[in-house]
Image 1 (cartoon, rainbow, N blue to C red):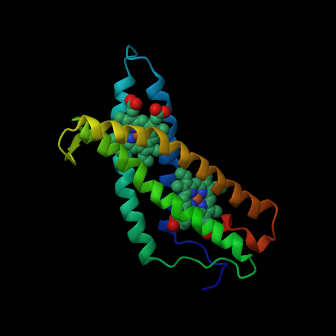
Image 2 (cartoon, rainbow, N blue to C red):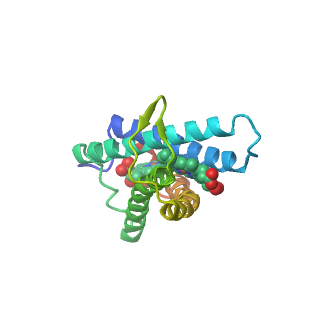
Length: 177
Ligand code: HEM
Ligand code: HEM
């Protein structure tokens, strides 16, 4: 397949919808945890954060299936191999985090004996109540979204570098627009 081809429309839509949701969830997660308990809408935000977080988990599965079924355009042949490897490594890390971040939130809530909502539905609990494990998943969930944010920043810098400081045929952003 030629490198001038784009990602398929469903892959592009998935990329931008999921990106928007993940970045918003990081912002809302940071904001809601900083609110005082007396703020009336604090726990409404928790409800929306959890619901959209579970949705991201479902989108992750759909995305993997979609990626498996669709043709992914090859990277430009003239792109140096270390850049190709770095880009692919970042994509793999993003995929791992797109699973680990929402799953750690889900497991934290389940182990803490709290409901996991999906809008007006209630998701099944993944385990019996276990305060110790809830603490471990909490530690993980309050850390890895920010590691993800750092990797997203590298991912964006990479896309901008190829667009503005590279040969026009290395502009991979076009393939995702
Ligand atoms: C891609 C999905 C998700 C992202 C990016 C995300 C991100 C975050 C972030 C950045 C925080 C704030 C951490 C802090 O600064 O203390 C947070 C907190 C939280 N998240 Fe998520 N989250 C996601 C999914 C979920 C899911 C699926 C659940 C549960 C079903 C969940 C439950 C929570 C809870 C309960 C807190 C508050 C923890 C506390 O009060 O200390 N999150 N999340
Ligand atoms: C939460 C935020 C983001 C995540 C998790 C993410 C994740 C990914 C992943 C996993 C891929 C590989 C293709 C796939 O399997 O879908 C990809 C491709 C791409 N992303 Fe993102 N992305 C995010 C945000 C952005 C943003 C804001 C930009 C804009 C600069 C961007 C630009 C690109 C480009 C240009 C590609 C295509 C790279 C290529 O052709 O190989 N991404 N992204």
